[in-house]
Amino acid sequence: MGHFIKGCLKMRENELKKPK
Image 1 (cartoon, rainbow, N blue to C red):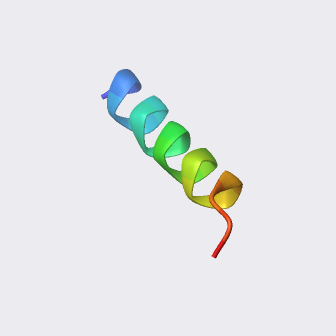
Image 2: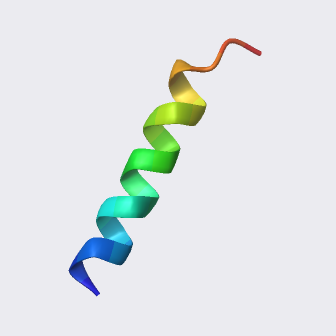
């Protein structure tokens, strides 16, 4: 379960870095 949350955080980070 730990790496699942880490993956979510990483995906969220990528979304924030992506210019809309």
